[in-house]
Image 1 (cartoon, rainbow, N blue to C red):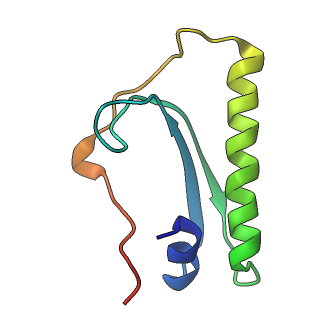
Image 2: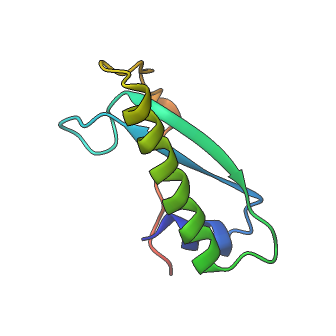
Length: 88
């Protein structure tokens, strides 16, 4: 399921984009960038989806431009991990 659908369906007022290093397990790599954004009642699925893509591109571009290799990273707190569920 798509994260933007979950944000809209649940009436969320904010969302987030997280970039992390690849690891063997799903979504468990160290975080290298994270950014929150606002969601309004006027946002559509398309506008939320587009904002997520734009922020992801901006963050990847910043990491490349700043040439921060190896990346500064933060280990994820797996006890706080959440996953979007399928719509019912």
